[in-house]
Image 1 (cartoon, helix red, strand yellow):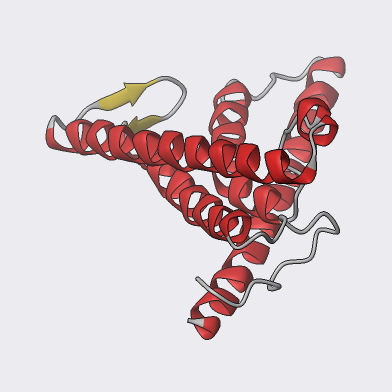
Image 2: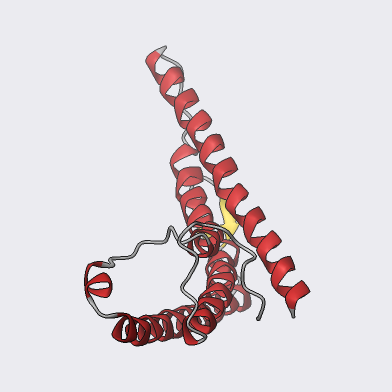
Length: 174
C-alpha cells in the first residue's frame, strides 16, 4: 500500500504542474490576442473558448494536488476555536462530507460524459468538438480529488492532521 500511496503522490505532483502550464499558455494566448487587437489585426476569435476549456481543465486536474498540499479553500475559524477532541470529530465529519460530495460529482460526471458520448453530442462554437471530451475532465479530476479526500479522511480518523506544511507522501496507509 505504501508504494501505491507514493505513486499516487507522484501523480498528484504531475497534476500540480499541468495547471501551471495551462495558465502560462492561456496568459501567452490572451496577451497575443490583446497585442493583435491593439495593432488593428484580427483577434483570435477562438481564444475565449480556449480559455473556457483551459479553466475547466486546470480546475479539475489541479484540485486534488491543491487538497494534498493543504491549500484547498477552507475556513478554519470554527475548527480552530474548538478543543482538540471536538476538532478531530468535526474534521472527520467534514472529510466525510467532502468524500461524499466528490463521489457524487464523479458519478454524475460519468453519466453526463457517457450520455454525451452515446448521443454523439457536438459543441458548435469556435471549434466543433464532441461534448464528452470536456465533460470527461470533470469525473476524471474529481476521482483524483475523491481519492485524496479519502486519504485525508483516513488521516483524520487515525488522528493525523492533514499536513499543514504542504508535504505530500507523509501518509503510510492508503
